[in-house]
Structures are given as structure tokens and as C-alpha cells.
Amino acid sequence: MENEKKKIRKKRKLNLADKIFFLGIFLVFFSYLTFYLIDLHNIFGLRDVLFNTKGYYFYFTYRPFFFQHWGRNSGIAEIFQYLFLGGAAMTSAFIAGTRRNVSKRQFKFWLLLAISFTLMLLEDTGDLRHVFMSYIQAIFVEAEQSWAGSSFELLYFGFLGGLPLYTLIRYGGFLKRFKKTRTYLIIGFIFYFLAGSLSFIGTAFSKVFDQNLYSQVGQHMYNFSLLIGDANLPKVWADWQASSSFPIDFFLMDSLVEENLEIIGASALLAAVVSFYLFIKKENVK
Image (cartoon, rainbow, N blue to C red; front, side, top):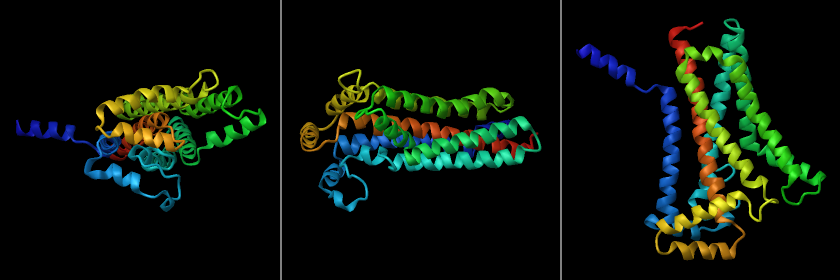
């Protein structure tokens, strides 16, 4: 009986892959909790601290909101994404090298995934989509994103998401033997698909509607935040909106929702790669 209990405990024990994924979940929970406590309820006066801090200390455009420090370009959330995606790319490349003389299918699978993760990392770190789209809009004389910019963005996302999807369909048949790896990969791709879709839909139709969809949906988040925030929050946010060009409603979606979806996706992708590596290392699988 005691031996059976030990076996059950051993089976339930989280390995490194599971811990990586749950770290991603924890980070998302932490961000929303801290947003609630600081931005909405000024816990320990930290919202006041953010609003009283001068922007000239920083090498980036300073905004006095925790959620913006969390989700801005190269902010806290993206740093974790860099670590997850960078780790996934390097580990995939290493696995590809170890499987080269074992299985051509596995070699191609992990090599293409390493390339895919590297491209995703470059997009996160360099914001390449907006760089290329800027030139496209200049060529087609679009001061604001319209059909040319949106068409390019759709093709860009199609390639970025299409390569790992092709890899999974074309070479991923062997993953039936590795259920945890397959599950984490699917979770990662789903969350990146959601984040990419939101990013595209959020701004692609700015010319079609009077207001981009991120701002429309973000306005509901803005109103809900005022509803659950403290009594001073409406005035604090209204005064900030009146004195700056920073749209709080838009960045609630861009910095808090989208970036957290990417954290879950990136942690799941790293967890998938690590789970496969741990299994073949332990079992010496061929």
C-alpha cells in the first residue's frame, strides 16, 4: 500500500516542463492582481508613486500605470517572452542536432520549430511587423493603417503562424508517442494564434470603423475598471486622458490582454520542448 502511494506521488510530481508552464500562468495571475491592487486601488500609495515619478529618468516613454510597465514594448512581460522563446529556440535546435542521425522526420521537425521560434523571437524583440509595414504604408501613401498595411500584416502573420503549423502537420506525427509535448505545443500555438489575431483585428480595420476595435473593446475594460476601482480612479484617469495622448482603453487591450496571452503561449512552447528533451534523455528514446 505504501509503495503504491509513493508511485502515485511520483507520477503527480511536476517536472521542469510543467513548472515552466505554471510559471507562465502565475505571471499572468500576478499581472492582473497587481493591476487591480496598484492601478485600480492605489495599494500602499503605489499608484501615487507612479504618477509622481518623473519621466526623464527613463530611456523609454514613461506612463504612470503598472499595466503599461508590464506590457509595453520591451516591458516586463516581453522580457519573460524573450526568455521563453529564446529557450525554446535553442533547445529545439539542440534536439534537432541530437536527432539528426536518429530520425530524419524528427530532425526536420525540431529544426523547423527552432527556425519558427527564432522568427517569433525576432518579431517580439524587434517589432519587425511594424517596421516593414511602415515602409509598405509609405509606398502606398497610407498615413494610417489601411488596405495595403493590413494586407501586408495579414500575410506576415500568415507566414509567421503558417511555418510552425506546417511543421506540426507535416512532420509531427511521431508526437502521438509524446502526449505532453503535443499538448503543450497545441496550447502554445492556440494562445499565439489568439494574440496574433487580436493584434491584427485590433488595428487592421481602423479605416473601416470610426474607431479601431482595440479601443472599442478596451472602452468596456476601461468602464469595468472604473466600476471595480476606488473612488479616486475616475478622476485620476480622466485627468490623465485630458493631459496626454495616451489612450488608456487601447493599451488595456494591447498591454494587459495581448501580452499575457503571449506569455502563456511562450511558456507552453518552452514547456513542450523541454518535456520532449527530458523524456528522450531519461528513456533514451529513438
